[in-house]
Image (cartoon, rainbow, N blue to C red; front, side):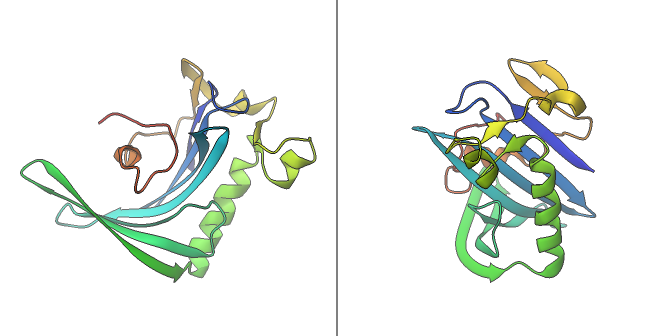
Length: 171
């Protein structure tokens, strides 16, 4: 199943941010499309895992339709301080990663018009579909989630070198 978070408040269109998370064994995939400010929407796609020693590693791209992972990240903790190392990667997604990306993008399109679909509606910005909330539960302040949504991995939103969207989650 895919966890979904949708913030319908603000942004340059009729929604702010949508985040999808898919869990496959120990891996967590995150896909997001959200407002970055100045009438611009940014994209994010990443794959993350926690190693046995508590070190978090991942690969990510600033695209929801990437063919390559752009960067790799290693997050470790020393004396309660977070240490983040980001390096360029430029490694092609393997077949299983591409399948996950395609599945998640298909799910994303259940909620928004994006790209060519939005352009057909005379919009250069993504547009929230009318019945977007049929499978989501309203939380508060324009935020909707589904039953599978959890906050794990959202600490990455606090690092602008990983997360280019304007939405930030607290610890």
